[in-house]
Length: 206
Ligand SMILES: Cc1cc2nc3c(=O)[nH]c(=O)nc-3n(C[C@H](O)[C@H](O)[C@H](O)COP(=O)(O)O)c2cc1C
Image (cartoon, rainbow, N blue to C red):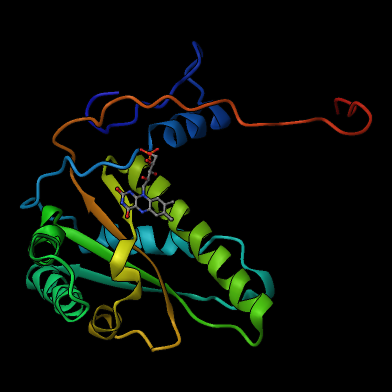
């Protein structure tokens, strides 16, 4: 691993083990804002990442994801929208000031929202599908050598942020994703082994 470049494992014979390659990409995906805010990410790459995000599983095929690509001045306008809502809510000045500048930390911020379903279950499943789409996008970004960072916080409930992005009042903002070219690696992370219990008979090897 050099910066966020993923080096795909090949066997001695030179063939790629697809699962090993995927494991490498998945384990190298990290939340990182160590990016060059002035180095653009091409529209072509962003379109590819959004297209791969839309391959996520989606019950009832509702295609609930909505993407907004925010670059340049749009990032400060986004911050100002959040700052205005924080001001109105009586939040401390430091928090309001931080909101104004924080989206300038990366060259691209992707706003991702989920549309409501016909009932509570569909609305919940739509959001699940959008979360799956976001992870798919983050893995694609990692494979492309980009650093990424899924952020939520107060912006998720900001009416001005939702309006600035052109989402409907009934849409749910699921994340603001920072994307950019890495300038370094985030500190290593310790992950506990997931609980995994086998129930039932041993499966037969095909
Ligand atoms: C739904 C969701 C929301 C998140 N929101 C934030 C956030 O607002 N601020 C933040 O610092 N990290 C946020 N994160 C990133 C997590 O903090 C991060 O995934 C976690 O620390 C593990 O680190 P890693 O992503 O590098 O593996 C969010 C992650 C998810 C899945």
